[in-house]
Length: 281
Image (cartoon, rainbow, N blue to C red; front, top):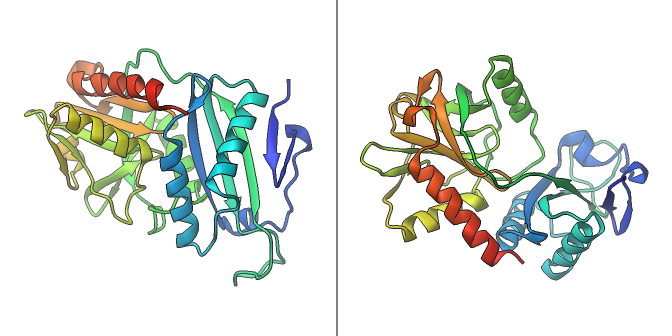
């Protein structure tokens, strides 16, 4: 059965959804996006995703296409129409359609597109294997734009090498994974992750997991770390909206935590799921 998607005010079958060839999201990647997990038919961390969406739009001199209440209504309706229990809602906001020009157009309507995907969000995680690659992305990674070609290239490089993902390195230090925030756990049990800046995306799951970790009495240090430090860590993990807390069991060929999910990553994922069941709306 075809999915129902949302395009500029209308719910339509996916094979009838259309966006202009002059849309600036297509021509210039002049657009931002968000992905909100659907957990048991409810939305996880919705307020955080909407706050980040508003910030991303503001950094590009755009406004929210609809207010938060309407956005929540649209998300819930899309989840209902597609009978999604576990998965996500993807939304993309572009500056709109106009004749091709580098200068921002005036008086055009934004494009808002939304669709759902079914995904398995829970279950045992055996851990992923990653390789390090240079971070070739633009300088404003804190804005969640649709400029994802570098991420796609990185995923393909990992696949070519028989691995699962990449960790990105800039000036000798790890920034992020190809589509996630990343962490190491020192042999003393301290969680280390890069501090927020224009170099990384302010992950919504990142914020939630760090809060939960602090509540568990775990020590957290926000600073850059190198691949060598990561290779010698006790364990490592990554976080994102639809993968939650994912253990990393190998970095550039070096095995971590005996090649299985580390205890801290495993526990944080369990706690995040427990809290998610309570807080999803």
